[in-house]
Length: 347
Image (cartoon, rainbow, N blue to C red; front, side, top):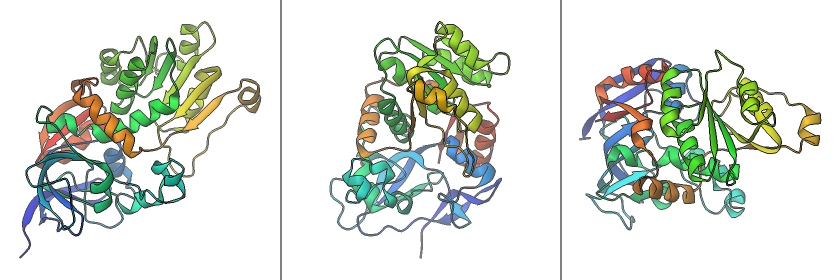
């Protein structure tokens, strides 16, 4: 007879229920993790509000993907893990052998969509074998589950910062001061940026941006963010601009804020089918570098965990509330309304 657990189940847009379901069964090379803490993220909010064709393919479905916990069971063939070990894992893994993996772009591996981990808003979660192999790590006893659960989103940020190529003394602008944007600001400073500019419509996020290291904070509802950035940079624009919202209008803003020969990192994923425009003359004669940056590679996961363990990231800026699992719907509503950063969910 199957064991039972409590979990948040996704039934459709705006319909998440706290109910009893079966504990996942694990197979060859897999782990069963007892969730210590799970975190809400922007992707969870988007899924809650408008669905997600990759994360949620059939309903009802387990939900959530940022977590850390304790190994409960190990599948046949698993090496390096045993029950009782405290771990963190990501929500996908590459194959290590395909066209993109061989070209050092494992974040573009087609296997990622086949290894997606969902179900962190529950008492237990199953970790597929590829994720166990590539992206599951033991965490030190000194690190809380809450802080360790930041590993996956921070790994994505580490990738974005790597692609940004920030130089000592650069001015870096970050559009969007949600948890991802806050981590971008923290790592921009660690990378040598002398000035960090943040732009966000939400007061809570602007206030947190100051704590995260922003030197200038812009409210785009009261001033033109492009003009404000140019004003702060003697008319040139920022050396590096990172867009962490995912809207065509802010993608265009990001390019407009970037100085000639500067770099624009389009990190926020816009909705399918949308487009943005760019001035071809400025793009060519201004010698702009525009990069799309997606997801993470296993090396970024290792780097992110080291940064968290070393105290180089301030989790108190990134996680503003804690709630029990049965309040998951309230947590998603709170985050989507701009009244919280991440919410820590305790099963």
